[in-house]
Amino acid sequence: MAEDSTTETGPAGRGRRDENIAIIRDLAYSRGHRKIFDGLNLDIPRGRVTAIMGPSGTGKTTLLRLMTGQILPDQGSILMEGRDVCRMRRKELYETRKRIGMLFQNGALLTDINVYENVAFPLREHTRLPERLVRHIVLTKLHAVGLRGAAELMPAELSGGMARRVALARAIAMDPDLILYDEPFVGLDPISMGVIVRLIRRMNDALGLTSVVVSHDVEEISSIADRTYLLSDGKVVASGSPEDLQENCSAVVMQFMNGMADGPVPFHYPAPDYSDQLLRREQE
Amino acid sequence: MRRVLLDTVYAVQEWLETFGASQIFLMRVLAGCPRALLRPGLIVRQVYASGVLSLAIIGISGLFVGMVLALQGYNSLERFGATESLGVVAALALVRELGPVVTALLFAGRAGTALASEIGLMRATDQLSGMEMMAVDPVTRVVVPRFIGGIISMPLLAAIFSAMGILGAWLVGVVLLGVDEGSFWSSMREQVDYKDDVLSGVLKSFVFGIAASLLAVFEGYNSIPTAEGVSRATTRTVVLTALSVLILNFMLTAVLIGEV
Image (cartoon, rainbow over all chains, first blue to last red; front, side, top):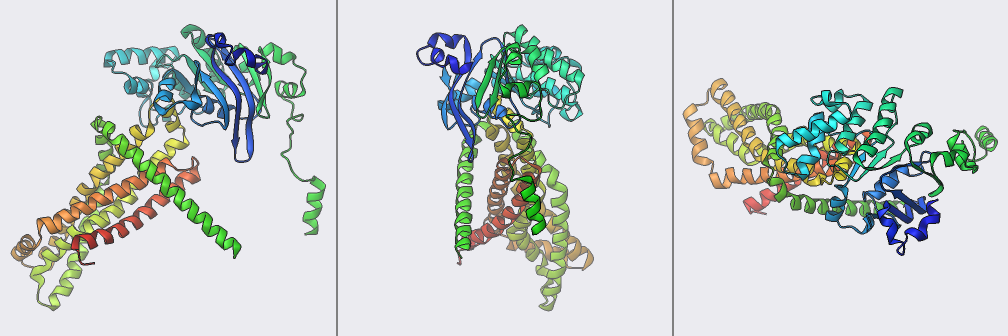
């Protein structure tokens, strides 16, 4: 588990930095009075597909936002290639982000430009490549996700699965080292889901990327992840290969992996006693 | 009583926070201007969106405001036998006051709401976060070109409004009511001063352009990323721009005339 490797990857364990592209230590983050993370420790191994799973509301998307410096934690460190994201100035943060691709839940494509221009967007913003080369790169990336033929379409003309594939092509346009997927399977039909699942694995291996996939789709994520973290109550409650998690006997892990409605994560949102509440209503 | 006091304190605190945030935002926008000016294509596109697409409403409104001005003016001036001054009355009212003010109010309704809702929706659909993640500053890439586009568009639209208004006044005054065409134009040429009247109108429309564009991009950029949040930002844009324009107009007029 990540908690166990804290000392190995701490300040004394500099050798591990090459092995892990990102190291999160003692992360605490609260929203209002609610603690989202409380002493979270987690490593992202280089060149692997790491899955971050957990019930809805455990802060999986928030974790990605913290990792990319979009929000700042209350406490703790997030080392990207050995440098703390939380202490970076804007310019340094932007330089780091150029090496990170992120796939948002809804694709986040720019709606006023077509698919081709969306994929070309980061290239045009950050490079001065000649138009011929930009075209070559864009078509290569679109071909990789199977959408070279959709280059002229507008984002509004794409299905959910296609939009996510275009977003994936855009995320890899700058050849990043790390790519973050935020719930990539939500709302997709089985075919589109299968395509995205295969693309994540294929891209990771073919381009030598490191992938972090935030999801709660146990089956899909288990089929491609090398390492899995299960979050609950602001901490990592289990980690290891998907097989390790399937064999884990912890009540939280079993409830999540087997999709049980009730357990340590209760079915009911905290509420006063049911009969008391009903009777009080009648008395009123 | 305690509750009223607390509510007042919270309201003042919220207002101060918003004011502070708007000042920081203004600094970020101004800091982003030099870089945005290096990409004139983005600004030209926004001048088209804010300016060219507002031409119809500005032109038609200007024409009818001028026509009403001529009717009312003719009715009043006729009592004093001074209908030949209709041209100068219409021109001064349009160039000094109605042109900049009504254009700014129409600009808030047409272009300001479009800017606020577009940027608000970009936030709601993660497009701005997506840009941030691509290491592209959304303030420089999205906000600043729209801000500059608005500032360029406003004086041009105000000029078109005034020109159309004068055309409307000519149509009603000269063509319909029979005011002498020579005195209509000559009185205008003699009495309308380039520096005191035309330039003061241009200055006003420029200031209103800054206020209207800044409020629109600020409200859109800081909107809550929900349907209700975007709707609220759009409404606030119109209300705040209208109030700001009217207050600024009084202050500018007082300074320009120098009699207060």
